Length: 354
Picture 1 (cartoon, helix red, strand yellow):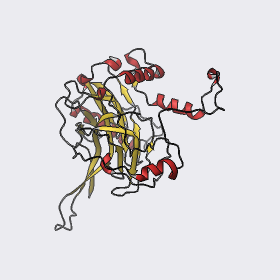
Picture 2 (cartoon, rainbow, N blue to C red):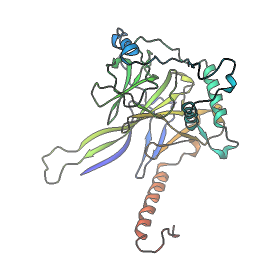
Picture 3 (cartoon, rainbow, N blue to C red):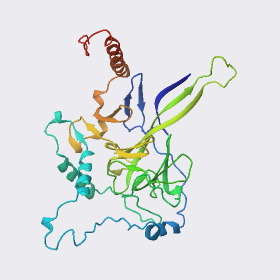
Picture 4 (cartoon, rainbow, N blue to C red):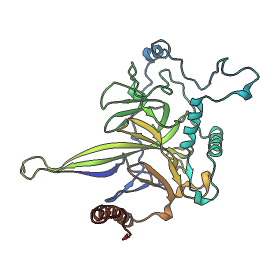
């Protein structure tokens, strides 16, 4: 007999000041603790790999991606910048950024428009003194702009990357040098089948940050418990297997370190790595607390539902006890089962009994 139990797999106990996730399923309530990333031994910077330089210039046949953009003479004429029209790809990229902007509950008052919110966030990010200084790496290879599932013809030094193990793949994100080992550089990412060295470019479904950010890693998965067969009592007893289906990378508010007195997580910026699709995206978060972006985030509580697809921020005072959550989920499931049964006995689709 095979049963599956949904759990969140913390890597280590959280600090006292950390808020936590409250997740409810149809059968029980699981609480997610926000763990610290496992501390790894620091290693000296390896010698530059000559393959990287070769790939950047000749082997790939691509120009290196930089922060500056260039325009051809045919695109815009000198002195006629106002007549420049955005290309279709640029318009699509802009719409994509708006789609993944933080959504505030309209019941809280006048909603913040997506362009204004994006401009305010960009201005605040550019002027923030908490930005992490960028470090130039000789082995850095920008993977932005590449097609997904593109297999690269070189091997990476895995010591320079955060290796995130999932059920269907291993995910690699560039790890800048830092004593806390929780800084991520999303400009260079790879994905491989488990325990192999065939590196390919993952699917990026949302705009990724162009600078270093600090994140806390949380595993979302389940335990598969195998029970011994009844007719073979001499077989091994219960066998438990851990399966990581998703990983959540939650940004530290203002990139503060874990030991900072004002440390808090920024639930509005969560990056989700999916094991099945081998992709990374930014979670769409619904904010239902008042105060806007400048509110006190120490009272925020993140609710994750629908298998890690629905994210909602509420106030801690609105938290329901586990019994209430379980009863609500069981009632919804029981109602669906009853409706399915009664549909066979009547000539109309929906019942007014509930």
